Image (tube, rainbow, N blue to C red; front, top):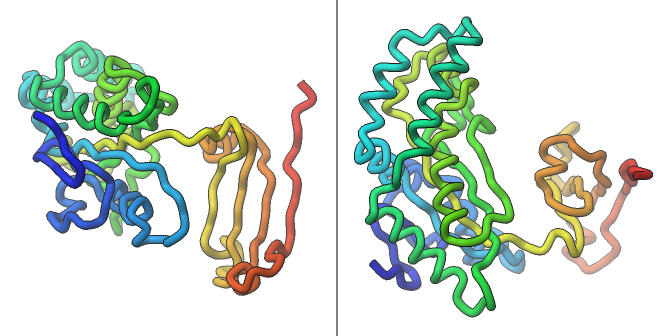
Length: 271
């Protein structure tokens, strides 16, 4: 099944553009739709965002059902003791190992590979991509699942992509995620995720990090706060580095004047 520009199946949305109105949250790819707005220029005109595609939550459910994993997961988790750390780790590990040893349905796998080939067109070799989880329930009024599922960076090649997709789905049953759902009263079988596959940028040639559209401490709306460091932005997100910090004043940036109000250099390692 070839995936063409602007095309999609029940398993794939390609490319990440905002024109699809079929219900991103229900399909489990809300995060990818927001990225798609930036890819298409609708979100922030002038910001160059790498293209990609979304593997839908329906593909995730197809995998669990087709591999016979749903019944096994229900059986394992019905008696798990979340306050018994050893039991939680054993049962969660059983589920994740079973998922990683199972094969994706052939239709799902081929559609993912077709989309990846389309994304790699024009490159001398298969491109590096980020493979990101996007759960169907991440930010709710009474619960937040954000950060519980995995992200894989610099993934290259068909086999590595398929393995990373399976690992994203398996991360739905990380020990922390299992315990949180049980404590909050969520049905494990009603939670799924989509997977965002997006072309990597060459952060090794410059820097990457996190940008906030307002001042996070005061709420002042006329500045942008940027935390950045050399290499992958994941290092900043995880707190592995002490990043540089910049306050950028929006009005002067818009008018073409020097916009940096304040900057602070991060700590540099001597090693």
